[in-house]
Image (cartoon, rainbow, N blue to C red; front, side):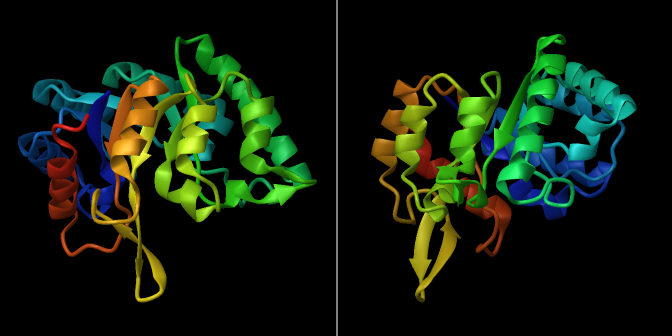
Length: 251
């Protein structure tokens, strides 16, 4: 299992091409060889691919807007972009609430679309990878949304987010075990209680048992563990460095 950096963490420093190049270099110099691309500002794909390859970075997966999946022209460009990046895992950060209603019927429509996307990506040698939040753990008709996606989308892969599974009221390790062989990337994100509120935390500074979590990930054959922290830090680069230091020697 390789560790990496989810660049959503440093999204304030990836708004321009100049910032993106600088941030990629900084991330590499921190000791990361794997990245997930997310929340980048506009950037020429040839430039981006050039920087990624020059730095020797492995793009394990991406997050893309739903519009890129829904529009054929954008879909074709998305495929081409991923080929240039050398990335075969095409990710969606969330089911778009402005397109699909948060209801049993709404998720039925989403699942139909997802299965179509999975087939189209498979034809290109790629996979559709879904990132969870907490709302997929709500039940409609007595069934959690996440469990419907797992059962009704047989070809989908997952970017399982440990924090959001816990926030949804479930045990991340149980879902790691349940999804054995279907998780391409696990978002390592610690869960802390501070002043009676849930907050994000650097790895090892929250409440998760990371030895147990890492062991479960290895047993589930997860290829990538990607560090992410959405907020609750002074400096996102420092936050990534603290988490990386904690994990070194454990993975």
